[in-house]
Length: 336
Image (cartoon, rainbow, N blue to C red):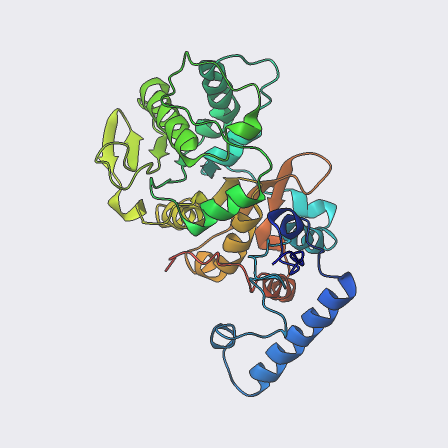
């Protein structure tokens, strides 16, 4: 009874958080195995979509050796894309019939808050930065949708975060901005409150009397208000076909691109620097081309400064190779 209790080598939260990453050599070896398995499957007539329902590498893709969910190395995808690009790939043929699709959250997270003090300053800056896009035929604002019920992704985001979020009970234009944005963005409730303020501000302050369409995306699935609407010539029409159950704007942006094409906008530019958006757009490129897409641009930070990358000039074989690196990412949206 008096003997000491020996340690059983159980993993603590601290040791799990600081777990070692896979070695580069092991990762390269497993990617080569995956490529070989995919090629063998193709030679035997098995579709890639059916193959990817099973493991194509020895190690689990979604879990590490400790049984914890892994984080996608999205930076590797961008590096793979960047090395193949040429200076001419960062240009596109602008025309008066261009449609712009704006990722609201990603655009707001780029705003420099150093000289801003209140949320109405953020709103003014956001509207001013997006004004140039509203000078053309159509401009879509696509929001994320956040559920009050926590999801697996929310839990993972909190587990990886070193900073506890501060929950806001309410946000209005006169509310002061957080001094540390790292305590603001991890909270779904905070982002939902901010999106409602942005939606209301755009709805109230953007002029819709001109000939150009302004589309405000859906904010909440449970609410009748703040649904997807098209504002044009002083009128508002609910766009039910643009509403979906997907929470993230990444998955709904391709739907807005397709809708723009169906309405005669052969040149579309997406304002977002999210890697998942790039992957989703490349995946659905064949569908876009079937609907008379001429050029698809993406405002990106791949170059030394933000610029427009023309996705339609990328080589088809390279695109297929690039998408192979994203086999473990669930970025498929219902574009048909």
